[in-house]
Length: 586
Image 1 (cartoon, rainbow, N blue to C red):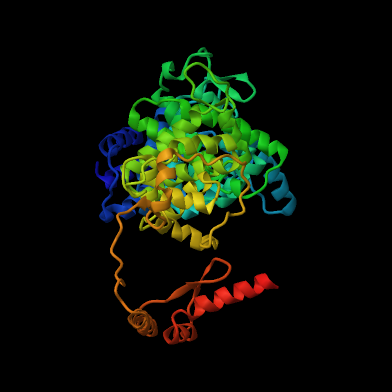
Image 2 (image 1 turned 30 degrees about the vertical axis):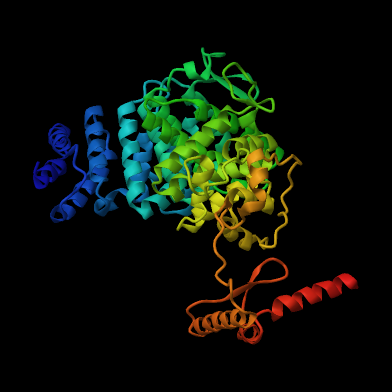
């Protein structure tokens, strides 16, 4: 429909004519998400007329058509200016049913204001009293279509406009949404209302740090959203920290029906909001009350991890959001993953139910095999497994039995092969530093941060990066606290141990000695020649020679160090041995 004709109908103010024109426009533009720049001014003018129209007493059908048109226009990020004022946002919030008393007051007509000071106070009080009545939709038979259209419009505005985000925060829209979220089990609210309430909540917490803090603290977001997740999944609690689905208590996990599409959609929105709210939780201490909330949430997340959605792709997406959130929880609260009783069909290890840990391990390996965007897709699950293994002995031992079983293959390099150990060792030389460090940290923790054991499973060459960063190139153990257990060596490893090259981690065929047949003078000449080449490259800033300091860390070699080596390449090692022996004599 021609925008000019639609604007002309709007300017007449006749609802029947406006309704007919808007219905035609909405039908034509329903699937339009790109807009012509030539009509920007007309779209803005239409938006202004719509906002004015929404403040009138409209027929239900005309009101719904107006809101549908606002939703369509708000898709264009260049033309949202008519909708980002306080009055326009307040009007939309009122129709969405999330207006607080202050929000509704902003959307009240201004004709009641008086000029004298006393009149201002009296008029403001009247306005707030009226606003309190309009702050929420009627409890009985609310117009759900109107609510959904208004919510969609607000979501579009927040997505496209920073000013709109600031106005939404000022109008306390999060309070209005939170108030309705408290009634998550009320059948009055349709799936669409609940979904777009959550989508609005997600956008506000993702885009506004202040709103994120408000939801977490003032509005008790962890408890509020935990109850939302509980309701969306239809859970009951046979034990304080053990979940089941209503009507399916005692049904084995493999026989549990998949979650419906609507359940999965709601649950994933809630998980994303919780991720925003808990973003810094594992970096700060929590008190007992908070810890109890997080453990309760952790039990629900375990249920998410063990549940299937409608299809493999949707299940993986659902589990991905669950893993991301689990990584934000305080580490001591992750013991809820191991709490359910061992039942028939469960994976038991050391008397503990390892079903959830096995799901996490399988999820991580699937992402690893895919090899796509490893930093974004793999690291959340790998970090979660690392920290769980660091703090829970049973988890560490179970993961070690799966990832680093007793070593039998001493013929192939640690990075060669298709076992999970081989795949993770290959990551230790990945081009992305974060991926490389995370993979090395995971295996190091499984080795109880023992340097000798770490080198045994990975080879010194692969391990050198982490050991250099930790100052452990001379060996020893890092400061982690782990239980004592035996390092079970297989017969194959024990027999080959003396012949294993520690750099590569495998038994190699003996190579001919390149210096065989050389005199001592020739060897010294070749050594000095090598030092001279290093010195030349160093002076040209092409390389930076390093050497191992006494504390096990690497330090830069100075020109003086290289000069000493060029005069006597064996001098430093001999002097160090002499110094060490002198210290022992003392």
